[in-house]
Image (cartoon, rainbow, N blue to C red; front, top):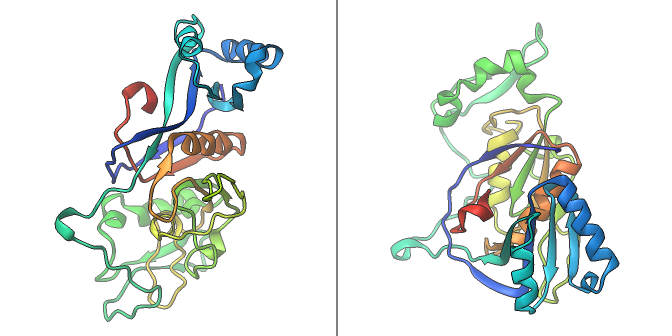
Length: 271
């Protein structure tokens, strides 16, 4: 089975709602998945199958037939059948609102930047008064010499998309893809532009270059960032979109998936 390393930072909790009569059918094995996929393709049930997810051994179906769903749940090769769930963004607590800062807001504090050492391939971290706690906590600068600061690694940021032209990210941006639907239920794969800001923020934490005047370096300023958008402008998304994005990431041999989001879902769904 193909696999990808997952770094999951749960920072949001949201309720969920079922919609569109779509279900994720997860199989116990690759053999079971292949057999059932063939079954769907050769029978009248094919009209229910929408998407096969080879890398996670699952099929997304659309149906209102309760008996059909029950037969799937009782099938010996089926691990679980979960309704598609939409995750709305959480409401601000007690009226608190996040104030988004402009990219070029000036600061008087000295900030950490990666500086290229003439005698080494990896950059050297210059610490400052505004060095993020996380950079210090994981000793990121010390690891750069051994890891090349992430050079050659591909990191998927599964979130709200990315501002690919952001000066602290553009150099490390590889390619992106969209898994959200527009108001008409259509998906434009190229519409991965971040309209919310969270995905760009997370991409900077992962692989910001620190090249902006006074900019802050990410944990791995030499990585390649591949953002996949499955959360919309309001910060909400669907189970289907997230799983399709992870399947896409495995197919494209991404080493690490950064998923800085969360939701209230059954344990079987999360697994």
